[in-house]
Amino acid sequence: MKVTKMSSAGLEPVSIHLIGISGYARAVLHSLLEVIESAGGRLAAATVINREEEEDSCRLLESRGCRIFSDYREMLEASDPSDRNLCIIPTSIFQHAPMTVAAIRAGCHVLVEKPLAGSVEDCRMMIRESALNGRAVSVGFQDMYAPQVAQIKKALDDGIIGRMRAIRITASWPRDLAYYTRNRWAGKETCEGRPVFDSPLCNAFAHFVNLALFFAGREPGKMARVASVHGRLFRFFPIETFDTARVSFDTEEEIEIGCTLTHAAAERLEPLIEITCDHGTLQWRQEDQASIMDLGGEPLIQWPLDSEETNRRRMLARVIQDTLAGNAPACSAAMAMHHVEAFRLAARDLPVEDGPAALQIERQESASRWSGIPELLDRLLEADFALSR
Image (tube, rainbow, N blue to C red; front, side, top):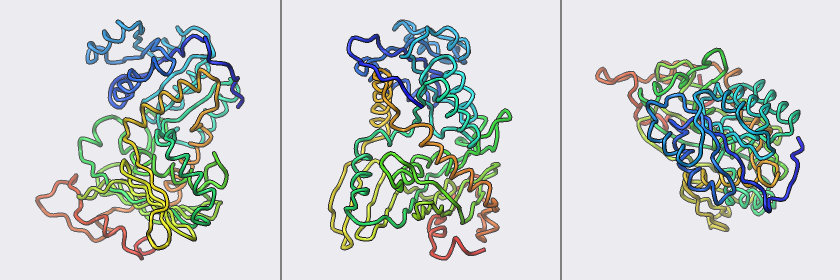
């Protein structure tokens, strides 16, 4: 897709159209209002389907000149034609594709929340519409907009610690009934007939799978592509998909990406990415620090890592500025599709096992079916686990 490049000097601000202001969209709105003017944008319109619950926010936005609509299609139809229209879509996974396509056809560039979509077919449709209409689609993997990520990628590509061999991602974010009942699609394969496949690989830990694919890419700006997957998926909670994964993705770049991820453990472990190279390692501790170390464990380069909120503000500002200047996206739909290919491959090729039965875990009689499993992460990390049945 070719995005027409233009000078930002003296141009009218980017007209931003926001779909939703509740749930995660509330955090996006908060961050957006902090950066919008300095980045060169204005909030032209917002879609709010639950105004009775968001009356104060709606009045605040209207006082700033933002028009409020109850239907996103009406909002898009009312937008003035411009190369500087940006639609931000922080909505449910099953809505990403139809909303993105509608926004593109209405003449908007798009920033859509991760994952790009619930199926590879939807991703391809979004990319095709982007190319046909000359509109950019950026994806809300906020870490991808952080300068530290670009610096780490360059250091790895420069071979500071030799050739990359493997990546491991480990994390445990306990979830409960409230998490899986907060909306209509959590833990579901589909919603309203559209693909979702919500899971640790698809949603909560998507940022880290995407980062691994980015770091493993052989060329700057290119993602690694998954060729095959092995391992095991487990369901401990009463959901349609899976809440726990111990899988390894084999990539075309001959770099294995191993993922040990769970929502069902009692213990919490913040995401850790470990990259093994011939002459050293990289460790990424989320919202803490990333370090490149030699084989003796001595740090060679260290980066402090920013908070989710800081990266979200940076992402929003960057996308507004790129829209104003006609720059290509920092995290494009074509890049983000590689993550969708990975989690859909796992869902296709690996059966979901009953967790307690497969691991011979007996729940205490007093425990609810939503109780976290003590020491589950340790069990998942056992060396021979992925191959045992």
